[in-house]
Image: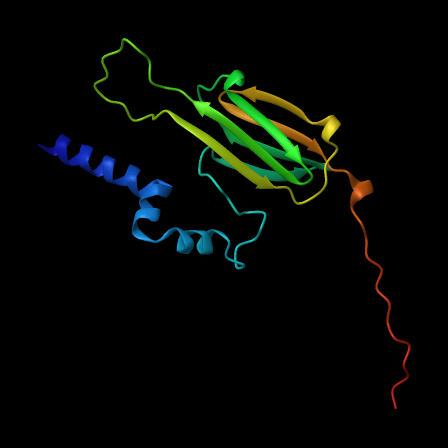
Length: 158
């Protein structure tokens, strides 16, 4: 009996985490308004919850760490357009010919966009996968960061 309650609870939490759950409760415009809220930094604006990512800077390099357990590199595509990095792919966990008793890892396609805080040197991007984590190393292009000069009026106070 307790196992049935646990299963129902897990199903409920999975539905609660899905974007479609919130779109059913609120109309699409309300969900977009929340996602595009000015109180949220553009650097933390997330379009998709999968894969989970960290974005940080170290030694003039932007680094993204993305959780992609069990994904093959053939199923993942990364593009950069100006300061927008896009990861798209398909996470396949369902195997034909298996009789599943528990199936918590869903097949899913994803399209995740991250706004990069600095311009990067696209030709020098390096990627690697270690223990289910995708690392994307992007050297910051300091030449494209513009400093805006500030001038002051030279008025003398009365």
